[in-house]
Length: 253
Image 1 (cartoon, rainbow, N blue to C red):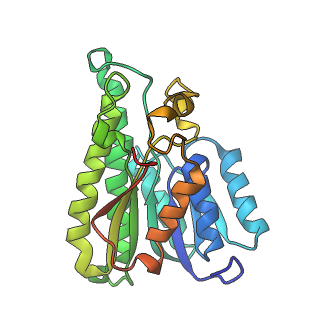
Image 2: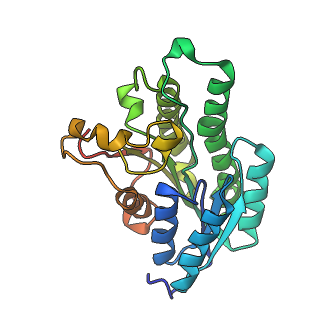
């Protein structure tokens, strides 16, 4: 579908104002989805994404949402309900801590990591299932979770807590996929490798992806668009027989 062939189908993208989320929002809009952009703090960036989509005759809204807060999640889905019929959820919002060994990590850091990266994704999925499952009178849909190759590699001396949170996302993706496979909902995850986004800066190492690119078999970092293309394939009917699947988009890492 082109951007001018709109459906009433809504995709919610958490963490949609920057990086992979932004690229996914624009790509999904180009395929006819109405896009609900969740953002935690950067209102200007979120509204910029909406403007880019609307300039191409797409439909989008921006909703402030910290996925570490259940009340924010409920408000996000309520806003999406008013925008159309929910067809897909992209659990993209996530955080990393600064580079650290486990023996230097605070309880607060670990609790926040898990609250955002795991609990937030599960709660968003819960709300999506209530709307999309045929068991609840819905018409089906797709949930795509953002994992990381850190789940396989463990991220030693960097952020083992982040890697552990993404390992949980892998298990959640597989189990939830089995749980709702008979209710019209497909569940999958993307495991990005080293991607050129702002998340490395929030971890205190803005050049991390490029510095480690020699470790990638393809010898380069990935782009947000390369991850977005995989996500929008998963939420499209082209992936209609894919569920409980984890797709590595990592240049072979």
